Image (cartoon, rainbow, N blue to C red; front, top):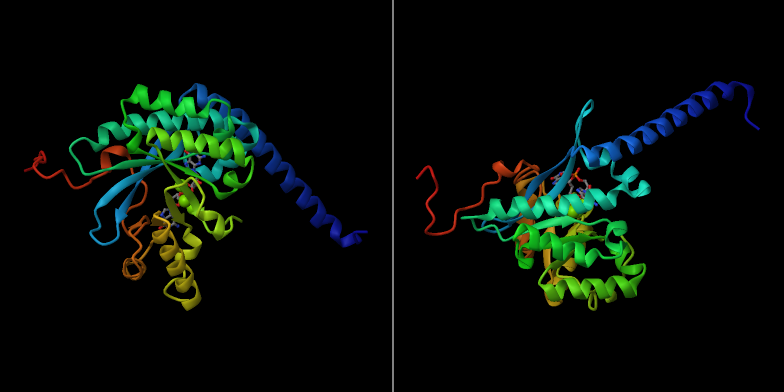
Amino acid sequence: QAKGDDKGTWQRYRSELHTAMVQRLETRTALHEAIDGEQFAVMYQPIVDLTTRETAGVEALVRWQHPVRGLLGPYHFIEVAEESGAIVEIGRWVLRAALTEFTRMRAGTTLKYVSVNVSARQFRTPGFVDQVRDALEDSGARPEWLLLEITESLLLRDADQVWQDLGELRALGVRIAIDDFGTGYSSLSYLRQMPVDVLKVDKSFIDDILGSEQQRALVDAIVTLARNFDLAVVAEGIEDEGQRAELAAMGCPYGQGFLFSKPVWPHEISARPQPGVMSPAA
Ligand code: C2E
Ligand code: MG
Ligand code: MG
Ligand code: MG
């Protein structure tokens, strides 16, 4: 049905599609080598108290130190890793690395927790709760130091097994956050029963809180709801001071974003030292 002059367009499209497929295949193969060759690293982004600006916790964000392409963010490989299942091994590695590094990072500071992203596929792997238990034990981290970030969709699919595992994790003392909250399909009435402790409000809701009264009202409603359900709230992707002030005025306790810090290496994390602990420079 394509007209003659569409033929060039179609062929260009075909060749782009081909290139994309080849690239995905290459990434897939390279990911397996990366796991064996330990080419992964974790960066950390501070999660701060919106009133005092003190760092309360850090989110672990995986990076791939690609031998040729350099330092790659999740955008370049997470989707392929999900499809191929490599995410299960990568996630297991990130969890152990994050707990080990956090145990060192927190010493002598007021840092309270490390937040680790868990993909649905990793969470549903049989033995995930044991995986967490082992990682805690081997790193010497306490369960209270760990916050696991899951997605809304995980709570809706396979609900029985997932809810049971979440219950076990919380019984250990591990806390659970819903990441990118608001972008999924969970209904607000559901929220009351959900076995979670923290809502991370997606950046897309924060972007326009100063420009749109409706957007502001929406975030305000989420913050109020969360407070009434005893959930902590973290606003994601705060980029300017006006947003921080507005969120703090709403009573949103925590935030994360480039205004405070981009993700950094472990040695660059600076939290206020514990009272009574002298910093080396003092
Ligand atoms: P996320 O969990 O929602 O993490 C927040 C992302 O937003 C991070 O991107 C962070 O760098 C970025 N960000 C934070 N503040 C700002 C801001 O003010 N402005 C803008 N424009 N961006 C901001 P990153 O590190 O590229 O990670 C992207 C996503 O990849 C994460 O989104 C998470 O879903 C996934 N991810 C990262 N690490 C892991 C992991 O270890 N396991 C799994 N399963 N997924 C991971
Ligand atoms: Mg996250
Ligand atoms: Mg998030
Ligand atoms: Mg997000």
